[in-house]
Image 1 (cartoon, rainbow, N blue to C red):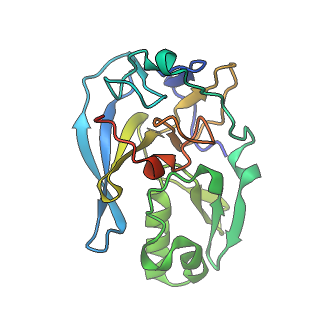
Image 2 (cartoon, rainbow, N blue to C red):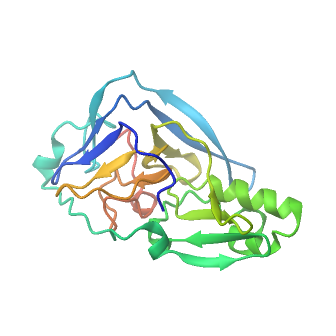
Length: 232
């Protein structure tokens, strides 16, 4: 599902090495904000990094200069083999059709950000989209999913509903889970595999930066189970 026009912003995956970023992509931390029940409800901007035309982001999780690469991947023998499906998003997606809106879901892309959980979860809210409050919650929660695992669709137009993002990169922090999350690509950033394969350009993508994902280059939530921190 290519919802964005290509931009002059690329992330090239080096073989068993870092992500090579070009195109002057802004970089800052993005913090998952929660309510008293520790449900994910908002994104809070964090530290901004100085602008650079090009930079290399750690992919193995071992760099001493995170988020940037320091060559540790070679010392630890990092295996960065890309194992994720290369099919377009829509060909992988399960479709749940509601009264006015539909939901597509590619579970393998889950980055464990948990915006899908409040108000009874989006998988139930989609069936209540003939009610304005439920529709608003459904769209908001689905669009907050950083990985683009979940996409809301307007049944009347057949088009996806996507947040407007300028090309940029976020480094997700998850205080509620006491861990650092994935690299969040926004606004149609091209990802190019180590073998030159051009992944589908999408508005929202999360890339593994802890080194433990079994769905590389994409995040599969492993950072939470291993307690990954970019300050260590």
